[in-house]
Length: 310
Image (cartoon, rainbow, N blue to C red; front, top):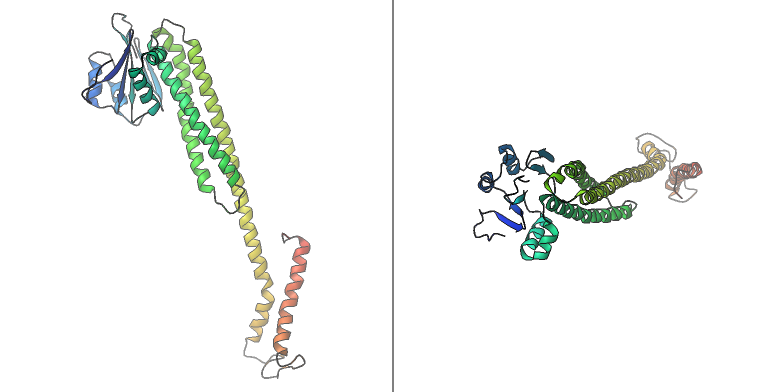
């Protein structure tokens, strides 16, 4: 294990004949240090510097170059075999694993083993397990939305959209990761004397489980989206129906008021003389009756048609 005194130096851990070099926030100067010792293609160096890359696996005679979203080796046994990880940003699980291997000999032996294939398995397995914790939080958010989507007082359209985006982002990571792990399980055996089949099969099973949960979450959030849309539409229709009914009930009063607002002679008007069989407010009472009775008849008819919710 090297002691790091300069931030431009490469930090590494050695276990038996295996070296793990971890580069965080790579720079061209750091990656140039590798070219003198490892036969990396210059395009791979450029890929490590770029922050916009799709997951892929490039196979060479003496090493494998892998790009994975969340988160190679020499056949000459006279020099140590190496695994190099390059992180754009800070992947906390890998950082914790690297520091743990530096400080604890037992953990270093457990994680690194004796081959680069085993170490790569440990790294991928750690990140997949960390992804399972993310899925637990995701499922908790789904449960919360399930409770809120049927609450008419709460608007959850934005929360649903954000969760759909999160699920889509995770699927974009896991789907190519499954393909890469499948290829790695076939290729990494040539870089290890021990049989790694069971180890990579276990990682594949975990990845399939993650993808299965994501597919179920995708279907669930789509159901919530459709349910929220239908409930919102139903609520809007109820509001429009109520406003329409109120407007309809006001039509008789509006018509009567419009007629008696005209400057023409009408029964009960000022010119023809006000009736007084109900007292001085007879005209007003008669107008109210004429306006209210049709409205009551419409209320009875609408209720008979089932347009009211009561």
